[in-house]
Image (cartoon, rainbow, N blue to C red):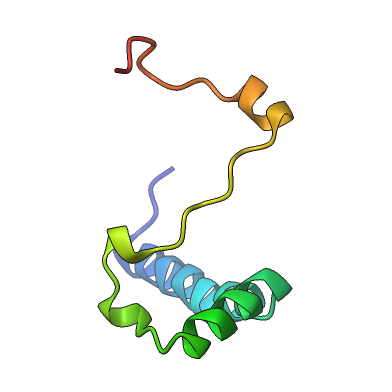
Length: 77
């Protein structure tokens, strides 16, 4: 079934609006994100100016997650 362009545009705009207005603020209210923001502000780090190497190391995955994750390709160096 084909949907006309204005309807697709409206649906995409609504989806982006929901993510921007509902999902991202919900993530911002999570305790782990609040702690990270507070730590960055305490260290006076401007997140807009950060590069990948300045980011804190991500936590190691738990064993139960590691068992279910398959890195592709298998011959990864």
